[in-house]
Image (cartoon, rainbow, N blue to C red):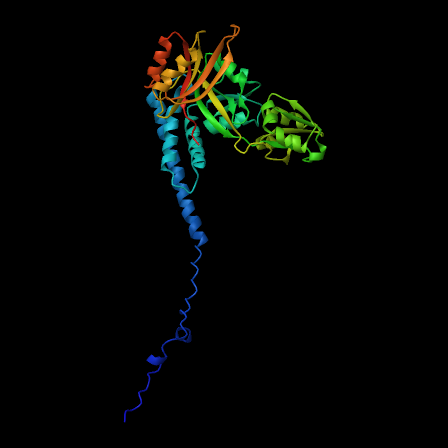
Length: 395
């Protein structure tokens, strides 16, 4: 007769090893996941401090090398002689190409632009004219393109921006040229008909319009100050929320904000920056009718610049009155596969019923195939003026 086998202490007999859940055909319960331990806050901050120290050291080293660039160029006349927009565009494109996150391209471009602006200002800050007063979108565009180390010159009109740059009182100017919803700013194009200045760059600025006032109450508003473009961009919102309210056109949104701060019954359409500058409260916003509301600005200067590798060229063409004249200008471009992004006509100054054409095309005027197309157009007898070849806007 077989002896009973004793089961060692702590061991489960084979016949009873399965749980009751398994016996009923159910899968055994999984253990609850263990939450990862929270990082030590002091350690994380120490790591950030160490990285900040490295960043600061590298920025200082970059500034020293930028100073060496100035020495390598020799003694130049002014800060404008050290500025190379094509070189900055190449640097910023590499920033975008290297970016794998988590920061956006726009954020990184802004950071590097400020570093380059500060390094350039070691020689002497650039003087940048823009449509003022302070708080305009033109000022924001100037900061976006040149950084905050440049010295801004707020001016009273677009015409004055052209005049101050042409006279050498400003190194460059920033002027609006078109809006995605309202089209071309005609006064800017008309200035190119007589001005010798060149286009050196472009800036695309996402524009948000706000209704601003002293009280911040919609019911107090009986008058609205705004640039005609701003009033048009928010026309639908105004019809819905403030029908019949008087609309007063002014030279700039910031000028409207300046006026609104002195009246209890007035409001202004402007950006958030104007609210800060003029101490106004936000009544409503954004109030622009289009979600993609973007304004394109041109950077104007006194000299052309070399290719950057991704450029746009703006042309001013005076066409002789003959059949197929416009076709004769556009066909050489199309035959060479040159993309045209804009064409607009304006009356010539001093010649009744004669028109000049503003044309934006891809490429740089010093490089083929655009150079070859321009030579062919000129050979036909049409007067072609290159307003500028400049880097395409970045982020």
